[in-house]
Amino acid sequence: MEILSFKNLVFLALLGFLISFVEADLKLGFYDKSCPKAEKIVFDYVKKHFPNAPALAAPILRMHFHDCFVRGCDASVLINSTSTNQAEKAATPNLTLRGFGVIDIIKSLVEKECPGVVSCADILALTARDAVAVAGGPFWHVPTGRRDGLISNATEALNNIPPPTSNFTALQKSFANKGLNLTDLVLLSGAHTIGISHCSSFSNRLYNFSGKGDEDPSLDKVYASNLKKLKCKTPNDNTSTVEMDPGSFKTFDLDYYKLLLKRRGLFQSDAALTTVSAIKAQISKLAGGPLEVFFNAFAQSMEKMNKIEVKTGNVGEIRKNCAVFNS
Ligand code: HEM
Ligand SMILES: *[C@@H]1O[C@H](CO)[C@@H](O)[C@H](O)[C@H]1NC(C)=O
Ligand SMILES: *[C@@H]1O[C@H](CO)[C@@H](O)[C@H](O)[C@H]1NC(C)=O
Ligand SMILES: *[C@@H]1O[C@H](CO)[C@@H](O)[C@H](O)[C@H]1NC(C)=O
Ligand SMILES: *[C@@H]1O[C@H](CO)[C@@H](O)[C@H](O)[C@H]1NC(C)=O
Ligand SMILES: *[C@@H]1O[C@H](CO)[C@@H](O)[C@H](O)[C@H]1NC(C)=O
Ligand SMILES: *[C@@H]1O[C@H](CO)[C@@H](O)[C@H](O)[C@H]1NC(C)=O
Ligand SMILES: CC(=O)N[C@H]1CO[C@H](CO)[C@@H](O)[C@@H]1O
Image (cartoon, rainbow, N blue to C red):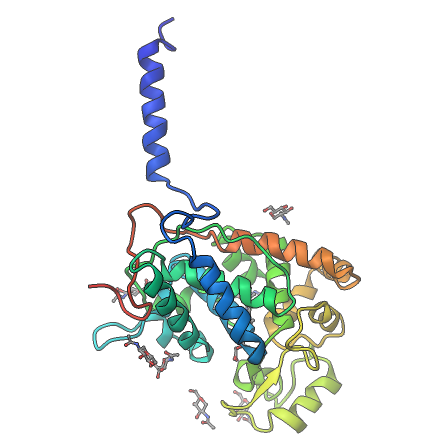
């Protein structure tokens, strides 16, 4: 048998080396040599400025999610539209994204330290992580080395970001498309413990749900009537907002899961999670605490999300300005 001859072993080792090169991976501290202060610049900015604007953590976390679900975590969500390209920002789900200016500021601080080294995709992933941590939420690891993508297409955002009207099957499919399972769906949806929503994202549940002038029967009646009386007073209100987790929308806590069990999840996609008994059981368990269980599991799912379809090695580019492609 000649199969494992010296020559073959050398060949296999070489092949392995080439494959590892092509499949260059993210790693913790990717910029330790090339820009040792990068992660500290991001963290220091967040620590200094976010506590004054505690409502910023939510939109940045959501932006990170929207980035990762369209062409992977490659900063495609940050690109501005041009006369010839409708970028992801122009897609309906992105109309309510906020916080782009903050990412641009942090990028410019990092560029000043090491021009052309640190990707916008990494800056977004790090900023989202630090923003949640500084707000007292869970902490997760962000291995770095993401490269910025060269395409940002509004239609792709529409096709990949699940709408708030999604049923359970649609959510499961959308997450599975990104390598995320039902555990990840339940945990990442827990991000709705912070932040706000526009009435337009759920007012179909309050007004004329099935064309009979009715409410969504899966929404708690008292909650629905309060929303109509106090917050979303007309069916076509596109500007008013509500706290998704009323009373603690700046605090990463278990209230989101407690609300789901009271049929007070704001979106149909939130309510959909309690329509499957095994998932509902998981939600009851999470809601019962302790908080650390949620935090640890959320962190694990975030570590899966922040690796979705990442570009590494020589793919893509390191954008100079996060809102425009380099050339
Ligand atoms: C499961 C499918 C999901 C759907 C259908 C969904 C849908 C939505 C919608 C419609 C809004 C309100 C936007 C507005 O009207 O202003 C929202 C807000 C938000 N979402 Fe989700 N989302 C999902 C999953 C996630 C995930 C995975 C994360 C992050 C890990 C996330 C984080 C957030 C945050 C933090 C906000 C508040 C944003 C702010 O305050 O500006 N969502 N989501
Ligand atoms: C991108 O668009 C935003 C919002 O319209 C604007 O403030 C920013 O200056 C633009 N950035 C570039 C580089 O054109
Ligand atoms: C954007 O994506 C859609 C859906 O995949 C595709 O049909 C369209 O051609 C893309 N647009 C551009 C300008 O590439
Ligand atoms: C769930 O939503 C999808 C996509 O909108 C739809 O095709 C499907 O029929 C729905 N499933 C159920 C059980 O309502
Ligand atoms: C989802 O994946 C994680 C590992 O990433 C695993 O621990 C968990 O059991 C999986 N959940 C389901 C429902 O398959
Ligand atoms: C409710 O929806 C039905 C069917 O789409 C429509 O005919 C009716 O005019 C709507 N009612 C209101 C008050 O908008
Ligand atoms: C809200 O937005 C929808 C869809 O863009 C539009 O048809 C409607 O006229 C808007 N309503 C108001 C009050 O501006
Ligand atoms: C934040 C952002 O870029 N919003 C844009 C979303 O798309 C609409 C319509 O294309 C633009 O007017 C917004 O500026």
